[in-house]
Image: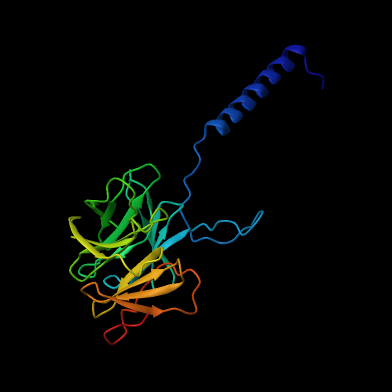
Length: 257
């Protein structure tokens, strides 16, 4: 059946309208927000590639019986049960930087996360409850300006915050230090400045002794509760140790390293 020129023009106009409507609908539709899921390797290009979880720090929470992972590149803290199942993620909006290591207050399970960004505020720590709800922002006095680096931390049984103030700019005149702060960020003074070689990680045992990972010379250093340098705890089997933790179920004064 032959269509008249008027009918053909009408059909062409209707088809063009449908095409434009469909194109406009596709162009303006808002993309769905996909929920985060545990990573799986898809491919690597030009090397090993970056994982979907860039784990900078990891810590066990004895109050909630969970493992906490600082996802540095994705600005998230991930919560896992002891079988490795993802329980949830959290990180406060408008943070002062990326999450680094993670510390847990053994008194109540509060989670402390140091934040740092190039050119941003220094000495900032975010406190969350054991479920990841943001509680407060702590500013560590004495670390807010100048060359300070507070991303390696731990918390003692009194809730005091212990910080490795150490980075690549340290030298013989400005050595790295272990510093102590109150739960609210008040500077309680230097704890140790000897036996430290590019430290990157610290943890207490049950007896209150402090252990420090020295990635500069591949050792673990031990300090008494009063800050006396007790020498090397371990010197072999490590290249650049980063991070340190103790088994909370171990017995004895020193726990298990």
